[in-house]
Amino acid sequence: MHQLTLAEIARGLADKKFSSEELTKVLLARIAQLDPQLNSFISLTEDLALQQAKAADARRANGESGALLGAPIAHKDLFCTQGIRTSCGSKMLDNFKAPYDATVVAKLAAAGAVTLGKTNMDEFAMGSANESSYYGAVKNPWNLEYVPGGSSGGSAAAVAARLLPAATGTDTGGSIRQPAALTNLTGLKPTYGRVSRWGMIAYASSLDQGGPLARTAEDCAILLQGMAGFDPQDSTSIDEPVPDYSAGLNGSLQGLRIGVPKEYFSAGLDPRIADLIMASIEELKKLGAVIKEISLPNMQHAIPAYYVIAPAEASSNLSRFDGVRFGYRCEDPKNLEDLYKRSRGEGFGPEVQRRIMVGAYALSAGYYDAYYLKAQKIRRLIKNDFMAAFNEVDIILGPTTPNPAWKLGAKNNDPVAAYLEDVYTITANLAGLPGLSMPAGFVDGLPVGVQLLAPYFQEGRLLNVAHQYQLNTDWHTRTPTGF
Image (cartoon, rainbow, N blue to C red; front, side):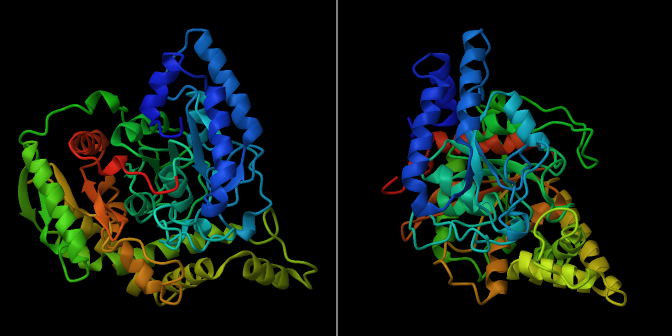
C-alpha cells in the first residue's frame, strides 16, 4: 500500500479495495519503523489520523466521493493545526499549540484528507538543507549522509521514502522545488496569492507560498485542487477561479513554446546536471514542444536582492516572538530588556538570528534606500524580464538546483554557499510566478530536478507539461533503496 500514489489511493478507496483506516494504520506503522532513520516528522497525530480516517470511510459509505477523501497526508510544521504543536522547527515555538487551523489545513480536512503528522523543517523556514531545525537535521532517503534540501525537507524526505503519498510544503525562495529536486519528487510553488497564507507562520510575507509535494504531477494536481482558492481572511489572497487541474493534465504539448534562458547554463551549474536538462528538453521536443533560447538579464542580481528583502521581512515578522505573549520565555529575567534579549537569544537558532540581524540592518535609518529600496527595484526588473520572456514563450525550463544534494554539515560554515543553491528558484518568488520541479535523472546516485516556470495562474500548464513528461519517462517511479 505504501507504494501507491495519491491518484491510485483515490481509485483504490473508490473501488473498496481497502479502507482509509486500513491504509492509515499501515502508514503510521511504517513511519514508526522507518522515520527514526530520517527524522522527517516533528509530531505524529495518530489519534487524529485514525479519527479522520474513520470519518472518511463513513462519508464514502454514505455515497460521498472525492480524490482526497480518506487520503493520508502530512503538513509542514508551520501550518497552524488546532490543539496540535506547531513549532516552525524552532525552540521558540516548541510549546506552542495553535488555537485554530490554517486555511490550508481546514480546506484539506474538509476535503477528507487524513493528517498523519507535522513534518520537520528548517527553523522558521530559513535554510536550504533542513539542518537548522531545533529537532535535528532531516536525512535524504537516497543517501542518509546527505541533505534532503530545505526548508520543506521533512515533507520531501517523508514522501520520497514512501512514508506517505503527499505532503504540504511552503516556498519562499525555492523551499518546495529545491527539496523536490534533491529527493526525486514533483513539487509545485503556486502563483503568489493562489493558496491562502492565513495560519501559515510567516517568514517573508511577500514571498511565502504554500504548495504540494508528491511523487507525480497528477498527485500535485489533486493536492493543489484541495489547497487553492480565495480566502477573505488573507489580504494577499487573489479572487481568481480555480480550474480543474486534473482535467487539464492530458492536453497535447504540440506547438508548446519552451524558453531556455542562456543565463541558466553558467559556470556555477554542474555539467552533469546540464546534460540531464538537455536530455529532458529532447524528450519534450519529441512530444511536440518548440525550444527557443531566451534571456533573463537581471537574474544575476536575484540572490543579493532576495537576501535583503527576505531577511528584512523576517526581522519584522519575527519581532512578535519576544517571550511575552506566547512561545519560549527565558528563566528568571531580571527586567524587561533581559526578558527580550535572553528569550530571543535562547529561543532562536543561529541561522534565524543571522537573518534577523541582516534584515534589521537593511531596514535601519541610513541604509534603507541603499539596500532595501534598491533590492525592491531589482525585484521589479526581474519581473519585467519574465513578462518580456512570456511574450515569446509559454513556459521557461531550466535546472532546479546547480548541484545535487550535498553531505550533511558540508556547508554549515559557509552560509553563502548554501544561499547560492537557490539561484534558479528565487526569481519565481521575487516575481510571484508559479514554478514546478520534476525528476529528471541522477548524478552519482542522487536525484536531479528540472524546473518549469509559467505566467501567473498557469499552474495547470506546468502540471500538464510535467504529467506528459512523466508519461514518457520513469525517473519519478524510482524508489530509494531500503524504502
